[in-house]
Image (cartoon, rainbow, N blue to C red):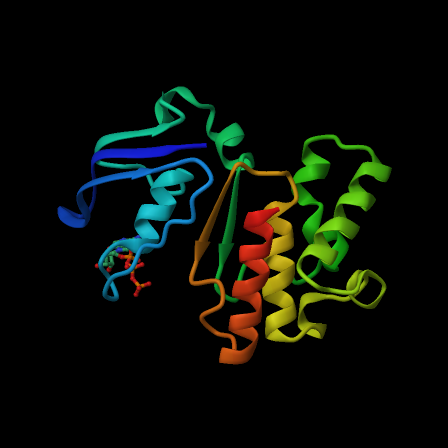
Length: 185
Ligand SMILES: Nc1ncnc2c1ncn2[C@@H]1O[C@H](COP(=O)(O)OP(=O)(O)OP(=O)(O)O)[C@@H](O)[C@H]1O
């Protein structure tokens, strides 16, 4: 799915967090936003899943204006992975991953197959982790579960906000390779 931002701005209390951003992201591409702390990277991602509403400009998904897409449908079609937080602490791994598929009314067999497929994709052993709670996992394992959850409903778009920032360099590199693998698949 392609994404286009045209002259997009976001102001908080009259101060620009994002100013006049023009960006075209083609279908199937990995695009990376790089910039100094506070330059508006997180805000830009949140503008795309409408956790934040823009002040000016236009955003299109496959040429369709974001205003013409139902907010809930939009969010369900976009995976979102953030640093550290994000998993529900009182849900085990299985229940964390299946939140959206359950909302979408998938049947139990399809859901279980999906969880198996996703955990395999992020190199986690189903039987060892599926009943564990986030606190019982290592940081790297938690981030993998976060990626698996973001991919659970087969989203066309995956937004990642420094998802591996808090992970040691060795695991970070492994996870980056996992992601490229996922992208290829
Ligand atoms: N909810 C908010 N209310 C007011 N100002 C905000 C809010 N969220 C972000 N800002 C401001 O908007 C600007 C951009 O913030 P943003 O989080 O998008 O930056 P970033 O590039 O992701 O930074 P970092 O790399 O440090 O995560 C900053 O000046 C920040 O203080």
